[in-house]
Image (cartoon, rainbow, N blue to C red):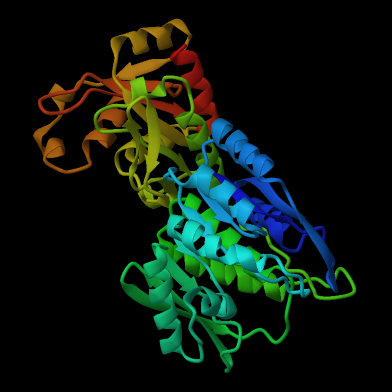
Length: 436
């Protein structure tokens, strides 16, 4: 997955662009950046800031969006109204989920947004976002209310939502007393409370870590409440592991929590979606792409999309998030293949076309097939059994695994091709040869 951070540069690498990139990497996503301002600060003191010109901010955003498929965007430090207007002009028509992390002051005391920029921030950026992540002080300023209780947090969240943010998460670490910290989510029209033990020390970069982790998990397709819960736990762990690198505040330290199987499949899906003319190969039932653990015992050992890779005009779009057990049909084929050929751990389905099969054979790929008209009634009547049965029939007499298994359909059943491989990258290599 590709995620974009639009924020300021922090030379201490605790927060800002540098902090975001560290978090993106730790969570297995590829981070891209647009720098809005350059700050001079360390862990003890803030020295100064200079904004990047609005034209260069626009150019950076365009250069990224023209070349990469971005799955989520985080907006952090925006110093002046010119920067805010530049960002708004470039993002106001996009459909990518935006996470807005209000940044008004740094932990080292620096002013990170000019006072005369606040009205533009509130009126232009807040209505663009999927979720906004203010702390208590920031929420007070945006909602123009005093927050001294959980009820006050709810009132502030409602006011912020009325400005235009689809969802609001207010972080309760500042001011509210007690051993527990409560974060409040307004998800559509529903409130949800997340609590954790209060940290007994302050660190540099916690807010950026939270919003960046939230951005990465939204990019992966997780539901908002799940993404927030993960980001919250990840941030608390990062704060507990904070390292005193400089002479001042300790800097949050992220740990890599990458699921390599999920990460490799996620990267492959991103690459698949930008293959030239791939939309022509998406079947009516759409496409799924799966990857299993070694020697899978069940569908729960195979990760795939809960939704599908869908055709949208002359492009394809990922609809749904990756989840173990998320796929039934393609995963069933991989599970059956892996039982006989353990090296086969990945699969992807494409639209059936005789030309595709002939091209695959001409490129040296091994194919096998089955006839759905010969499917036993007991199999056809049991939902989800056809693919397993057909795969088993197709490989029953083979000593080496086929690259492709296909069938030509049946009554009310769409013809289909499934490409198999050792891993998702292996499948992408086969696809690139088959469709050229």
